[in-house]
Amino acid sequence: MTHISDSSAAPELSFIEVGDSGAKRRIAVRKRTGEGPGVFWLGGFNSDMKGTKAQALDEWAAGQRRACVRFDYSGHGESSGSFADGTIGQWHEESLRVFDTFCEGPQIVVGSSMGGWMALLLARALAKRGKAVSRATLKGLVLIAPAPDFTEDLMWKGFSQEIRDEIMTKGVWHRPSDYGEAYPITRNLIEEGRNHLLLGGTIDVGCPVRILQGAQDPDVPWRHAFALTHCLPSDDVVLTLVQDGDHRLSRPQDIARMLGAVSELAAA
Image (cartoon, rainbow, N blue to C red; front, side):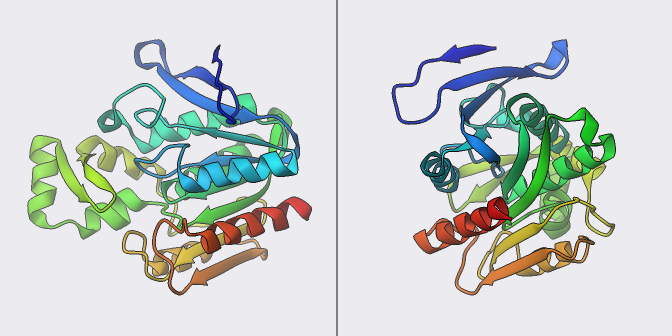
């Protein structure tokens, strides 16, 4: 593992290699040391750890003297790889590896959009292998516009036949974005994503869950968040519907809600 000096207020940048020898990805991580419970950030699809919510969480952790870990998936931000080569399985593998390597003790996992799917997959993986194996445990999940199964339910099922045909024949379709340039949706992303679908069954995360969802979200409809709550058997699941909220939920009042949820779980 190598370290690079960072003159900014951000924690030092570290890199960790994930994957088999033939397909290793160099994953960029920033870890803020501090007391527990720590916080672990899981970003969204085509996002990075320098986003508004991720930085706000890190600044909050600094003020609270809490540990905070955030990173970029392969093909995102400061990590290696091409975004078009990424899959749900790869990004889940990276999430679990960073969690195991950099986190210790009870953690509050905060996942935004695709990061909500990653958080649920992480919780399931930890539950399957048992607490004795892990240095870190889950104290709670804060999910912001969570998008489990989005490759199937929110992409594939919503695409026109013309778009589906292009993905199947050419292997990729470039989706227009309201947030920047068009980005690739690959056949591999869609097909591999089917190995990690969660909705329709029980997701036993073993900890409290707080969900923040915008009612005006054009990317992840609020009904998707409601469907998720029905899959969570825990009694301690709270869904907050922000009536005028969009997908990003990055306004000051939205950030305050996120930090409020984290603070509540940290104090529990």
